Amino acid sequence: MSFELPKLPYKYDALEPYIDAKTMEIHHSKHHAGYTNNLNAAIAGTDLDKKGIGEILANISGQSAGVRNNGGGYYNHDLFWKLMSPDGGGEPTGELQKAINDTFGSFEQFKEEFSKAAATRFGSGWAWLVKLSDGSLKISSTPNQDNPLMDDVEVKGTPILGLDVWEHAYYLKFQNRRVDYISDFFEVINWTEASRRFHS
Amino acid sequence: MKHELPQLPYALDALEPHISKRTLEFHYGKHHQAYVNNLNNLIGGTPFENADLVDIILKSDGGIFNNAAQVFNHTFYFMAFKPKGGGKPGNKLNDALVHTFGSFEKFKEEFSKAGATLFGSGWVWLVADSDNKLSIVKTSNAANPMCDNLKPIMTLDVWEHAYYLDTQNARPKYIENFWEALNWEVIEKRFENL
Ligand SMILES: [Fe+2]
Ligand SMILES: [Fe+2]
Image 1 (cartoon, rainbow over the protein chains, first blue to last red):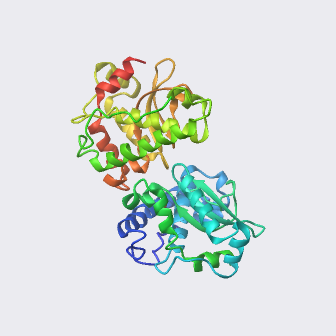
Image 2: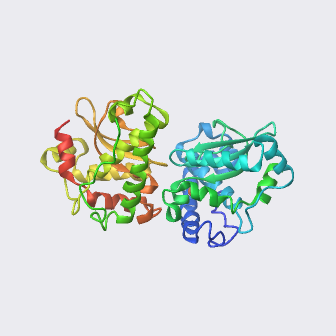
Image 3: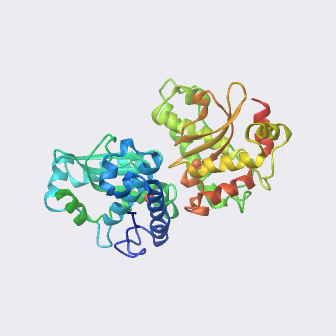
């Protein structure tokens, strides 16, 4: 079995003006496609060939750098696309809203803390809102293509929200201004999908 | 001691078409400058306030290390370019490269491959050890080979900001361009002063 590049759930220009079409096109058709192809090459002929991505990531500590980096890159970008929408933005509702308020005090405080995690990740990586095994929420960040599903990361759990802060995610539009990219991300967050993940 | 952004010995458009003016405006004018500013802000009131840059790199960690090393790394990178650069190193360095790697072309191939395969943000270095034996090493993010007792001779920045405006995801194309802008006289001098 080999992995396929997941289709974007919207057009390349659908997240304008927050995320530009050219960035989306290169990010999906070059970077995400690259991770997918390299993951397939890394697992070809191994016993990982028959495993799902969740199982591969949950046992990543014994795997090669190629499987780790590309398996993470394959999964993280698929998640990232689904967590954005042209109808996104605003604030979460229902139980996710309540959990965020209970944990961080308010949506604004959550936004501030998440944005800070994304802004201060040095080098390439991701910022996460994670649901821990006891059901509580926590903000974390990981280097490169690591993610909370990996068995050897510091903060393990279900990713509810993920933000790509590799420079390729924002450089064409924002260059060195990562903080402006982070604040634009909040205008396209698909809170319906984040809530669905929170309940799953 | 206040750290300063070094003046470049060429104009920002002087490396075109290999490295664009726009890339240098951001890379030198914004990123390099920000590392200098961050470093100056972070060392105030610490034991590193009056230390020289290499000393800070060898003794610090965390944010001070990251910014100090990035100041050094970028200066080392930018100072080894010139307009109408490229070509090959002079005899002494060339002989050493031939001795270690077989030929200049093989060195170039191995160094380029190290750049293309470094995952995430980082740097590729030609270094010498304490016996002046040459090798190629990769470092992640801000890391600098001086911390491993290796002496840097040349470096390649493979953070995406170094090339994304010019070649986007095509890092190997950026690395090809990099060779065309190199100032081998500067690199040769570093080698002779080891
Ligand atoms: Fe990405
Ligand atoms: Fe750089």
